[in-house]
Length: 45
Image 1: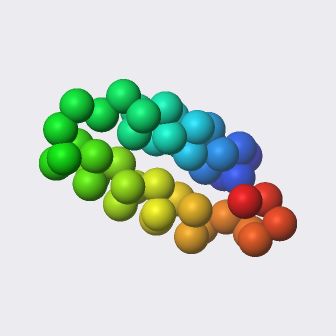
Image 2: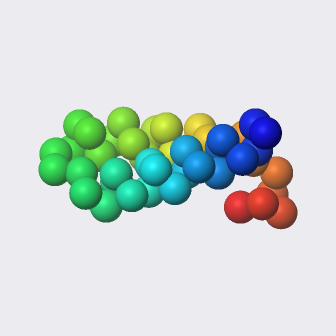
Image 3: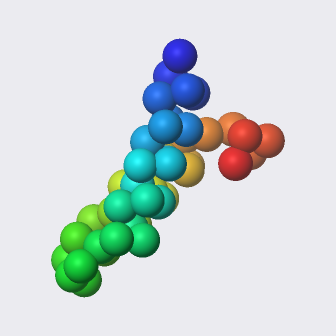
């Protein structure tokens, strides 16, 4: 279940990153995206 939620978070963060209007929001999303990717097993990425 946790892996599913992480994958969903990645989808959401990537979508929001594409729509980010300012650099502060963009940097926050990149940080969150990097943290979530680090939690996933390599084969899932």
